[in-house]
Image 1 (cartoon, rainbow, N blue to C red):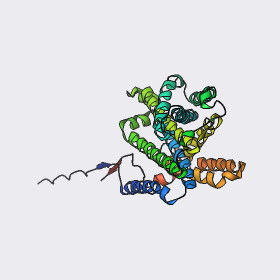
Image 2 (tube, rainbow, N blue to C red; image 1 turned 90 degrees about the vertical axis):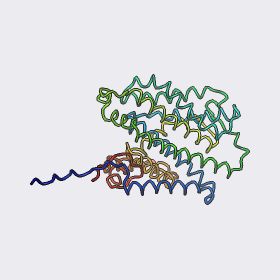
Image 3 (cartoon, one colour; image 1 turned 90 degrees about the horizontal axis):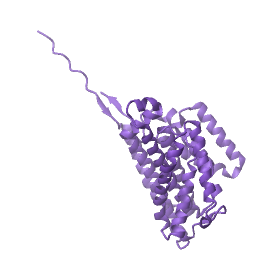
Length: 335
């Protein structure tokens, strides 16, 4: 009499866990609470929170570009400035509502990035990074030659003067929050898709990825265009929030420095990392911005400390080791 063979254990492949469901629920709850902010806080606070939303969008887009696409750019401020000036052009000179001009600004920035990619994609590694910076400087110099946009002195968004200040600030805040949610949500969906797997393969080894049949150039160009569109829309928000655009400010390389700091400190190649880094950077900025050079010194020391003590960033080196996830993108093998 033979013994019945024991059936092999059944395994399941899952993305979500109890921890990730709790994290995703907490994100949704935070978005709802943030949406109600204009009803319970002053316009000055919502004005400040718009800056946080812009940082989240810029860092998320830069992380998509560098953390998943393997493209380290220090010239994303080019698209930020393009977006800001497109809002000025469409609203002041074209008669379009400034709030409706923001998504158009993102599309224009994305279209410009598509054209520019055929030039900058001829460069690789550090040359690509410097090339994108040079591109941003060229765009700034061209903008300074356009008289209707204020040349080098800047331009004001006068078309919003008819709004009540509190109403304008509330609309700006809601638009900025919506853009931040869309940016994070878009990255989440992209990374869970086949394109996300291709991005990971390209980031790890572009030559091997191309040998496996992945169209490396097309995927990188897509990441570049999407990141530029997000930065362009963020530039439109900056324009509406400040009501003034000046080339030396909006095209400053400091914007790229902010993006790099936030992503590296939070965690490169993770969706949660830019959120953590943006919150930390925003907190330091609000607490120390009045201290002048001390503010920059503290930021530098914080960046050095994180890169030495937590090379994968705050999220990747600490929280990311637990079962808790805000955005489950990987797979888990369970019995």
